[in-house]
Length: 195
Image (tube, rainbow, N blue to C red):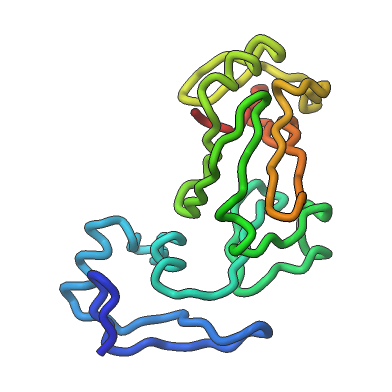
C-alpha cells in the first residue's frame, strides 16, 4: 500500500506515453477518497470526476505541460507539448530547475514567482493595476479589470510600467505583453490577471 499524506492508495495504475510512464489512476481506501473530495483535491459529479492539477503534480513527480487552447481553456499534458501543437507557437518549454531563481519585473521592482496550477488566474502586484487602469481605461468589476470593446481586442502600446519581464537563470528572459491576457466576452474585454 502506498501512502502519500492523506492518500492511502491500494493500487496505482500506470500509463506509458512517449516521454515516460505516469500514474493515471488509483484504487483508494474509502476514507482517502472522502478526504480528497472534502479537501477539494478531487471533484466528483454525475458527469465527470477530475483531480486538482496541483494535488496531482505534488504527489506524482514527472514532466508536465500546461497551455491555453484556442477556446481559452487550460489543458494539462503528460510530457512536453510540442510547439507546433500549441496555440502560442512562440512559447517554449521552461524546465522546473530554471524557476527557483526566476523573478518577474514590473518596472521598477522585481517579484518572486510562485506557480499554483490549481489556479487559472495569474495574480500580479496591486500597484501594477494603478498604471494599467490609468493607461487603458479598464475598470474593476467582479475582481477583474474590463471595458466595453468593439470587434477587436485592444492592443496596449509598449510602456515599461505595463509590460512585465520574466527573468530566468542564465540571462534568459521573456517579455509579457498585457494584451495577450485580454479576452472578449460578448461586448466586454476582460483582462485575465487578478490582484
